[in-house]
Length: 135
Image 1 (spheres, one colour):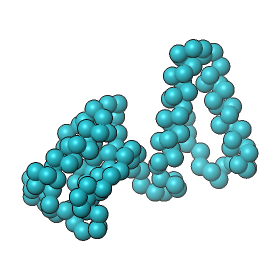
Image 2 (cartoon, one colour):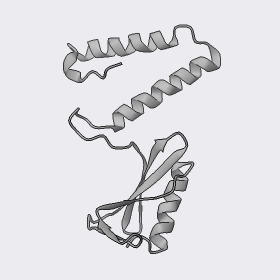
Image 3 (cartoon, helix red, strand yellow):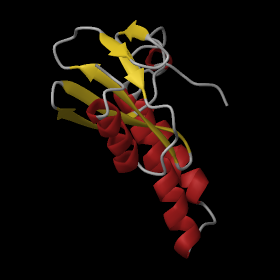
């Protein structure tokens, strides 16, 4: 399946009609729990698209799921794969971060271990900040 950009639709109404037709097609024979799972899958797909780049030429980034400010840092948790979460750490003032190991200076740091939830990924990031791994 190819990805269409918004220039291929004659109008917003036409785009909505095509989305509706696709949803009806996916739900055509589904009932009960199977139907609920399909609806959940469609909802997740819409969220991923909505959190992605606004234009086709923008670089793709992982969907940020949770953002919080901790001390002088901004932590963004993102889903890499099913049950695999990481977090990026940036300074809230935009200055570079020093990473203890391996020694480096960067705009942001990413946790090195996968977590099973966004909350755990944020917890890993907080530990890195508190432990002096990110300065």
